[in-house]
Amino acid sequence: MSVKQTLSFSQLQALPPALRDDNSNAGALLPAEKTGESWLSGDLVWMLAVVGIGLLLRLIHIGHQPFWLDEALTFQRIHLDLPDLVNDSFANRHMPSYFLLLQLLVPYAPGAALLRIPSALLGAMSIGMVFAIARRVGGRNAGLIAGLLMAFSPLQVQYGQEARSYTLVTLLITTALWGLVRLAQDAQRASLGVRQRGFDVWGWACYLLGTIGALDVLGDAAPWLLASNLSLWLVWYHLRQDTEARRGFQRNWIISQAIVLVCCVPFYGAIMLANGSHMLQNFDWIPQLSWRNIWIAAKSVYLMRMATVVQFGLMPTAVPLLGPLVALLGVIGIYRVRGRLDGRVLLLGFLTLPLLLLAVSLFKSMLLPRYILWSAAPFFVLAGLGAAALPRRAMPLLVTTLLLVGSINLAPVYRIETKPRWDVAAATLAANVRPGDTVLTSDPNAPTMLSVLQPKNQQPIDGKALVTQDLDVALARWKQGSRVWAVNGRSAMGEREDVDTFKNTLAALGTPAAQIPQGKEITILMFQAPAAAD
Image (cartoon, rainbow, N blue to C red):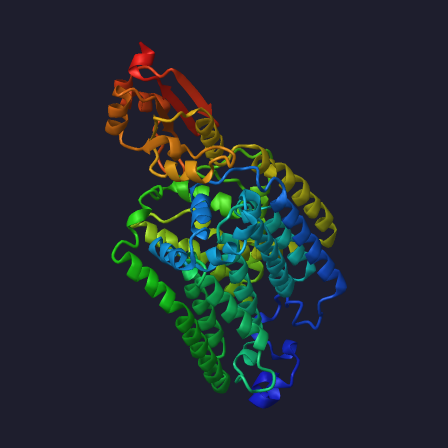
């Protein structure tokens, strides 16, 4: 008969956590916290080193790439007054919280770099949380590898250099995941009442605050509520032989979900009221589900490949070794924790989001790398656990490989044009457009891009020229003597009309007097007025 079967519930609480662990974990690698090994100063030093590397990678050339559409909308929104900011956020299916945070920077006249620094800091903090989770489950080496994967992931670096809320959501969900893993590792303590000695305050508090925070920042966090409740159900089921503990855990579970709903439902209700029956109508720009697109999403989120921003594709990678290596480590990690409750929690945290979006995409395409971004964190933890199974002497080689190959593969993030150069196009037009000219755009969001990226020392383009998307209006003004500047390019993901097709649609304006490339994605055609052309 086991120790657990011969002791009462109150006596059980006095035992060390390792003795209270369920026998189903026999033979599995116990987490560091359960073997009595506490965090050492060396662990903290390694964690800070990995966080520092990740922060540096996110700060390098942070203002080099121009805004793309999502960031331009962020810039516009934070310059609204409070009621308009809140209303605009809800009308566009966003929570206002992140934009209220960035609004604190408005008095400092923020440019691209300053508006992106919060994302870089939050992304670096997420690396620390990934290290902490992996360290808790598998020891220092697991934390080190998991943290380095998070630090060098090209997609994580890209969104750590973007003025959007994805890194904040990732930080909050990793905080909640840490709490959930802690609850799973000691289900008996998790089942105690709040006022009972030994109640796991940190586990429940981190789970609650991280979950509420993530849900109140971005709707992309909604699947986390499903993943975490499936995990809590597993913990509840794990206690099936202890009626008293099971009842206590069920009470805490119900209370926690009630708190989450009270804190989050009003905001989601506001979004639904602001959008009515149009919640999914504006997602038609997402590419249709296909094996190719599934593979692109998986490679970019989990296998260390860099994705393009306004195209659904992958950029070339110098050393393709890293992706297969991470995949192998992930498989080893999943196998290694297959019989452990905390391992199942990590697996649910990794799989729930992509599987849910795949299911939704069978009816309405919703699979985008940034929509499954936070699920990379538990996957990297699993990969770290896989790496910790390797011989200790292999660890220096693995760390060196990650540092070297990761740095090489990240280079394109800093030197290749990953976002359309609307800043260059705006500068070209601002310098050359004269009063009475017409600017014709093929992208409906081009006026927003030209306005936000307008050079500060130039008169606004729309102050001296008419900016329109209507070809008939441009043609009428051209016949009256107006020069026409036709801008072909995209501001966000979606189909882009090639330049030759664009020229054909403008055949009534004649032959362009100038064709000015503005990076890879944008071309400006200038058509002289009829009299000048003659």
